[in-house]
Length: 289
Image 1 (cartoon, helix red, strand yellow):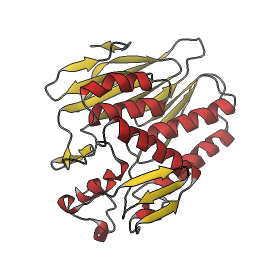
Image 2: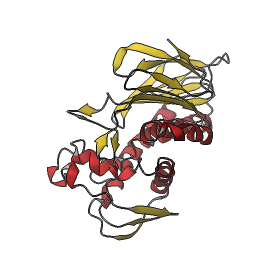
Image 3: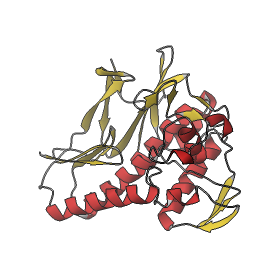
């Protein structure tokens, strides 16, 4: 097996095929999709569709079909977390210093940021003011699923797609699952345990990888403070998108919401609290060390 590796969405990607070799035409389609996804939806690129609402006046705006899909997922997460997850928290991330570094005029101090209200109906976005969306809570999982579907449509049956630690794996050619090690939050050389992927997606999130000063990328928009009670979350589900959404619920919701979300996404999960205590869902099938 030979890995196809590349950079995209600010992270390292690897695709492993167990079986026939990955054709150049499929590689080209994969690279083009990832680049297109980044060009359209990254808040770090000022000409992206995502950034077209930075100076928006109150009103209704037509959005692309895929942007509408992403907003629909975000709206569902917003409801599940009672508004603690909100994609317009991209404005808070920039206010805290995690944003478009080549245009400081776009930044406001985090205490000065007023998040807009927004709603979506089909492909119409309604805003009451400027917005900066951030799909970091699930965008990579969505992208992994698109690549997985591309591989399946091209006749590849046994593979694993790894996008910076979030993955989707079918099975190996011999029918066995892909065995994945889980990194202990904040400790790159220590494994917390393992999971086996058999036509499943896995998402891993922690508060250490994107950190600057007192801030990291998991900010509670209601309190305008970082999430501190949970330092790591892992979810396994039928798709990478569902797994990614589940990890967002783990960080941005109370424990009372974890079980209903787990049932909704058909996900098993693990979380690590700030005191080092680890909790798993009753359905957890992975191994802990």
